[in-house]
Amino acid sequence: MKPSYRCLILEDEPPAARVLLRYLQDYPEWTCMGVHHSPKTAMTVLEAEAPDLLFLDIHLPDISGLNVLRQLSHPPMVVFTTAYPQYAVEGFELAALDYLLKPISPERFQKAMERALERLEQERILEKTGQDSGFLSIRADRKVHRLPFQRILYLQALDDYVKIISTEGSLLPKITLSQLEKELPDQLFLRIHRSYIVNLKFLQNYDQQEVSIADRKLPIGKSFRELVSARLRNIEF
Image (cartoon, rainbow, N blue to C red; front, side, top):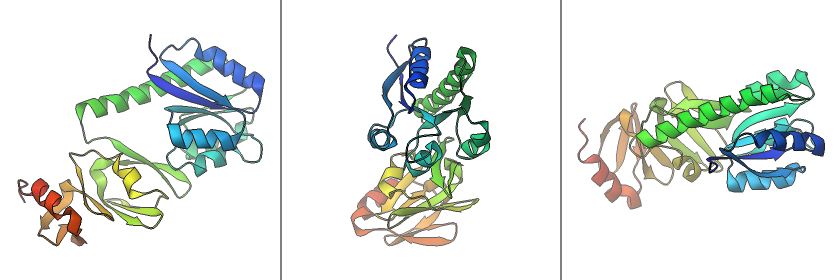
């Protein structure tokens, strides 16, 4: 069977890494992108290659696995692997999929892989059906938030950050607007300015200069006016 998903292992203990690799042989739908013992090299690969799942040890040279996860701009799904149960609560606060205590049994590993497959299959279904009922997974305030698309009003670029305004408040992740734009469904969101993306569901009215969303007026960039006009002319208000 051709692998459908990719994972990466960040583990500074070679025997523990070999155990994970041996277990992964029983899951042909997964391919391992590699084993890294250095957080620095692993983080470079994680940012560039975006695997579906990361097996992450907590006790690593120079930096903890928890802080590795906090520093990633777009973290993958994570299964923590450690011999220290006291970090479990902090791990789950970072939205870890699972927390495996060493020595890891095949049965416990199987449960983690079942959870990972279930999560990824759900996301794949959403992508295929084009549904806008999915989530934006984003890190802010040292936590990973799952924000439903339907609750996002608009996004505003602020230097190296993006302010996400939703019906529940606001978040300020350190990420670019262009990066986030790739995660948003086209049928629901529209970029109207180099600094703004809006949710069409909440659009109240518009003219050549600005749009109104939730009683806020947002400018339309000159280079975006033709595109915005073409997209919005058939929308009823």
